[in-house]
Length: 268
Image (cartoon, rainbow, N blue to C red):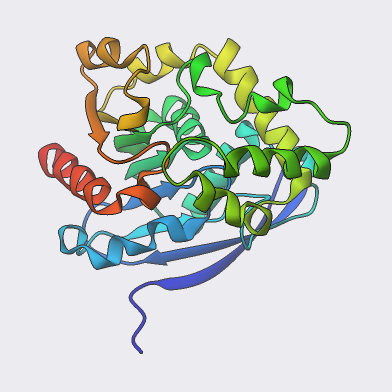
C-alpha cells in the first residue's frame, strides 16, 4: 500500500533534556503547514489532511508533543508551554520549514500562539482551534488547581473520569484514550504552565497583535466565550463548528477541514 505521508523520529535535546519526537510529514511544492495537537491528543488528529484534495501539494508536519503519544522525553518534569515551543522550533529545523501556515488546538493552540508571537516573520497564517487566549479558556487545565491531588496518577485518573461524563460532544471519546496518549507525570507541568500563561501572560494582546491573518475556531457549545465579538472586531475570522464542543477533529472533522481550506484559500 503506497504511503501518503511519512513517519519520522527526531532526536534532539531541549534545555539539556533528551527527546525522541515521533512525527508524520509529507513533502510538497506549496506553502508548508505545521500542526500542533491539544492535550490528550496526538499527531494523528491531522493525518486526514491527505484525504482532502484542497490541501494537495502542501507539505506538512504533525508530531507528538513531549509527554504525549509516541514521543519520549527523558525528564517529564521539564515539560511546559515554553518547553513545547522550543520543541516546535527544533522540529521545524529538522523538516526545513522556514515559513508556514500554523494550526494549533487547545494546548497546541497556546504553544502556537507563543511561537507566532516570538517568530511572527515565519508564520503565514494562524488557525487557533480553541487555544488559550484568556483565563476562561482554562476549563481543562485549571483542574490542576481546582481538584489538586498529591499523586500525579491519582489526579490524572480523576481528570479522566470527569472528562468521561462531561456534558459536551466527544468528551467520552476523548476520555477513553487519555491514559494511552498522555503520561501522567507530564500533566501537572503542562497544566500549571497553561494556567499561569492564561492568567498572567497577556495572551489576548499577543494574539491580537499578530501581523498576519488569523482564524479562531470553536465549537457551537462554546459560542458563549466572552471575547468572540471582540476578536472579530479586531480582524480575526471566526469559525463556529456545528454539532461540536472543544474537539472539532473528533465531532465534525469534515466542516473543520472545509473551514480551514476556505480560510487558506482567502489568505493565499
